[in-house]
Image 1 (tube, rainbow, N blue to C red):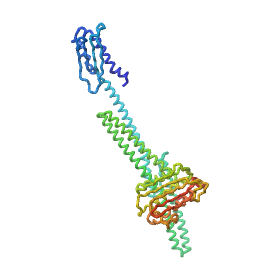
Image 2 (image 1 turned 180 degrees about the vertical axis):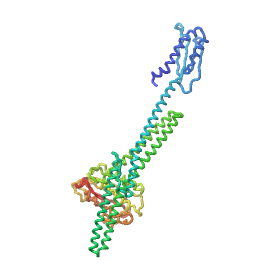
Image 3 (image 1 turned 90 degrees about the horizontal axis):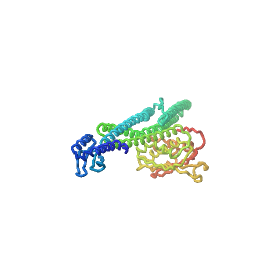
Image 4 (image 1 turned 135 degrees about the horizontal axis):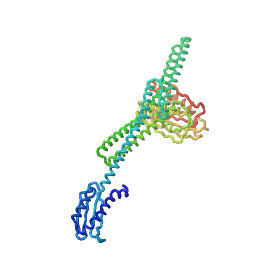
Length: 496
């Protein structure tokens, strides 16, 4: 309360009563009329804010007085005046008043402010909840339904989320991936039909080679089915499952915090109806701010995850050449594989300088990283491995005179390596790991195509080279030498 308002509301009436008593008591004290003086101060005491009035005679001391107990939750203010008769001091009057009225008015204003604040917070909460449901939860549920449908093999209907934001871009990326997968399946079906026709014609002409051609056709069909399954699992299953899993934590936390904030608001409303103290108000405001901070952090985390998955999906489906930071692409690729690391308790360390910038194809590079990590998990950390499992991804820029690969020495290059502490590769198998259909896990999860695809992408698409170093029980290391600027060619690369 300001000093001026305090003077008007409290000191004003006190000074008026003191002046009136000073004037009225002067003749009564001079004439020693205690009865009239007592009657007058009793009339003043009818004001409930007046606590006590004491009139004293200069010669005899106490003259008259009246008082009452003061309120326990108020403070007393006092005014003393000298009583004069013909400019001679003959006594004094002391009056005390409480500030209960001012405090009552203050608390009424405070409760009005609290009510307005609570109403504003309640409206903000419901608006935030409605926005959260509409902008995040509903599109996520719709995208999840579409993803489940695509996972069941139904690729006819499209994925539609008509929004110009990260969620809409993610839906467009998934839909573009669906179209490409459907085209690939149809193309493979046409190739299979054509191949079967050629085999049938050759069989009619060469009866003696019938069994050999039938075996070849069976092998080709199995290879096509394996490639199709691997592509769909790698491009659709891994990406979409990673999106659903990683978004579950921040969105679940946001829902929990929103529910807690709702309960706090309901409890605060009940306390307002009964009895509200300053501490209750402070606790509610503090809890609301903390809940809002947690909600914003989790929603920001979900938005960052969606942005990362969107960029990975666009790179994988379009394979466009662009400028990118190597460490960013590696971390975004690892983000799509994080569910595999968490479930198998693998540790992945990234030791890549942040300044390495490339003009290349991030989509094929992400496919290379994915295949090498999956190869380490399948072969390096198998049944004979004694943990803990560890994968290290590192990179360094090579001076041109230290480049020992087949890459042009005039082109700046980067050495990218992926190493693990698994069971390693035997000497007899080390020279054959990049051959197509070579695998030590045939029928147990290995197709023999993973490292062959890696070799083709490194040499044909990225214009680099790759080699492997390993010893039994000492882990394996794949070393790639890649130009910072990929060879000029088609700006859109199609790869399997």
